[in-house]
Amino acid sequence: MEKSNFKDTINSENPVLVDFSATWCGPCQMLTPVLKLVKERLGNRVTILKIDIDENIKMAAKYDVRGVRTLLLFQNGKQLWRQSGVLSTEELINIILEKSN
Image 1 (cartoon, rainbow, N blue to C red):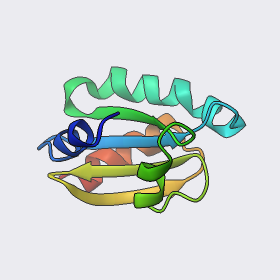
Image 2 (cartoon, one colour):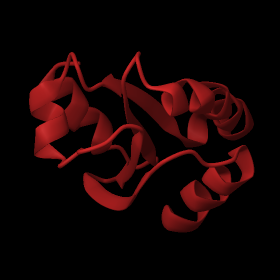
Image 3 (tube, rainbow, N blue to C red):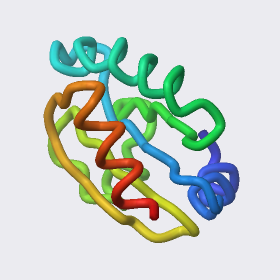
């Protein structure tokens, strides 16, 4: 993803969940169906971006991503939340709704 597109996206009024992951990461693969369910349940109320750290090394460094899977939640260009690891669909939905209100 290009820097300008990323910046425009995280400046959205809607929450933007950024998933820093890698194709070789087992836990990353486990969270993919969770993210799909989150998107299905929240629809247009959230944007989900997947960023492959191997293809976007500078972006991962900029956001101090040291391990994968790392999730960051942005709204209006501000980082609201971050966590590494796997979460359930319900946990992730609750975090998005709680942090973005």
